[in-house]
Image (cartoon, rainbow, N blue to C red; front, side, top):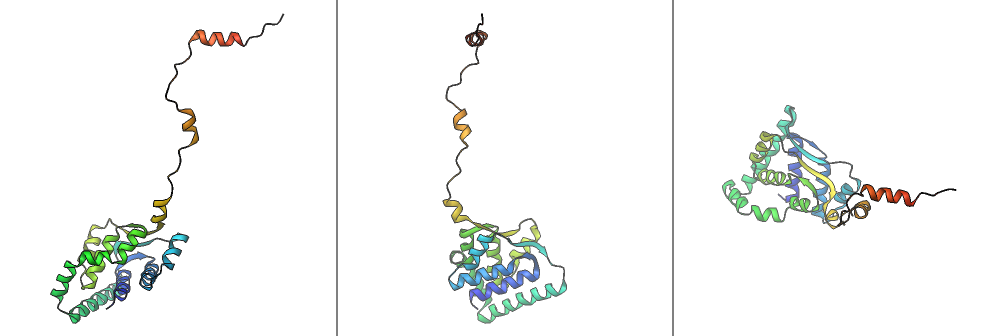
Length: 197
């Protein structure tokens, strides 16, 4: 099974098992990435209208849970069919760093603001071999939300730092003068007085 097909099945699996937002948008970003463009990602950042998120809460609907179990079982069967599952697990563990280097999740991590995207990557890698250990741990913790936020971090890194307000430069000096004495105040007053005769 191709990586894109596995990613799309993984999105279906997540939508059926957990509470999510805008996963349809994530599917389009995945498809664009494997087509060699980033049209959807550009629109996502430009419009900034939604956040893609996966929350650590299981859906209660039995229909959704059955569909998620079916998708995971199909993935497990296809892994067993393609080769010995033990060999697949070993290969997966040995190549985990290689997979992450060429993975869409690393691309998203470098391109947009994300939170806990590596959880998503690890859950996907396990889904590919028909397991859900990381997903169960994600739900058990219950405090980490996976988010893809429509902020172009490459542009933010290039943007100049904001300048200090002008009033700081004009009011601050290296030398602090002492307050005027009573005599200095009296002299100033007397120099401004006009005598009328």
